[in-house]
Length: 281
Image 1 (spheres, rainbow, N blue to C red):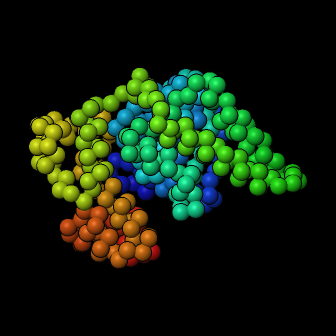
Image 2: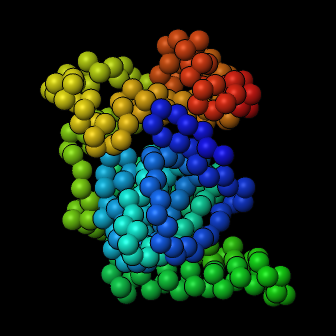
């Protein structure tokens, strides 16, 4: 099931605390921009792939680790003439796992989602992933093994501790060659995401960055795949939904997420999520 909103979709459903996939394929498929309600970690093994995340394009090399935080709008661009091999974690965002998900918050704050390590530093991650994959096969095939679930969870925790240490390290190295983006669009995206409750009209944004309105709108759509209006609206709706789910009254959640007209908010909310905001509690 997919929910279409403007030019991008919400995809994937996660019912466990986390899920690990190891996928190697060569499928001819074009992906549209989309987002998830969970965090995603991609460990790139081989292929020819560029990942577009919130206005930045990451050109992946073997061993790269990509962090895609919940609600970050993204899509892969895949060369289907060669096999694409990767591990993927889906990780639920909840209070119990917040100490393990700080790296995602930091990736959003930095507006940089790539971890590129030396071969030596990649080795612990590869070892853990190999052990997890072996343990998962035993579990899926109902092979009796003492403490299998405990070991699987412990390996995941170890992986995330290593990932946070690497990504939160004060000496973290930005490999700018791995990433391309338009500086104006990047500035606009960062401003929008840090000021969702402010006046984000086209006139205000164009004036702030001394850009022609039409050039700014065209460039934003060209670099990100979606319009400024739809981007802001979706981010505000996602913020309101989170506040409502946490117990905030619906009208207060709408106002504190940048909406001035409750009727317009309710209509957009139903279109995006398929139900009234009062039913999201």
